Image (cartoon, rainbow, N blue to C red; front, side):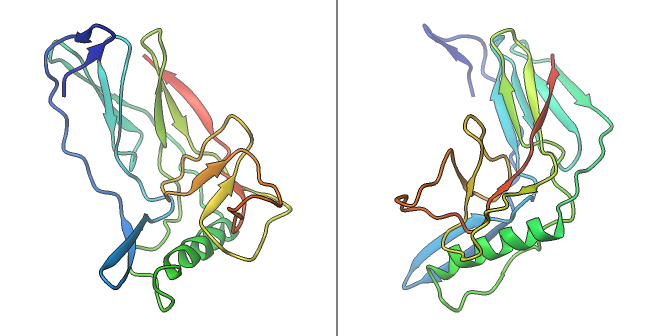
Length: 198
């Protein structure tokens, strides 16, 4: 991969570490396939900084690499306290994913790894114009008191201006109304926190 700026290519090509495919679940019907990732399983992330450096990591631990345009690689590691996946939170995601995949195959049963007991060390990189990158960390899940217990699709409602960082392929929505065609199966906010790394 080669970093680009507004004028085109800028810098030497960067070697990208081989990514790790996220743990997945799938349903099939008449040759069609529907796929989603296992909630809260780690998956690889990468992002470019304004400096042309590329941040890459796999959050099974709080560790990621900074690949600089000149070929140097900086490894950043930190101690961290894993955030537990609450039992009700896991159950809500399990119901939502099951409903989603049964939309393809009505007899579908869970066919991949179980939902883990803890969340990934981080869930995204958010580069800043300054050259820093913000590491988005998951927080404890918070159940919306108005949770709709009738699963229809694996969607979440989050506060406006936030986005889901769970690795479930759940699509965040800023708001849900009675007229919305997407009804959330259960609404859990992941409760993000962030920390900057330079």
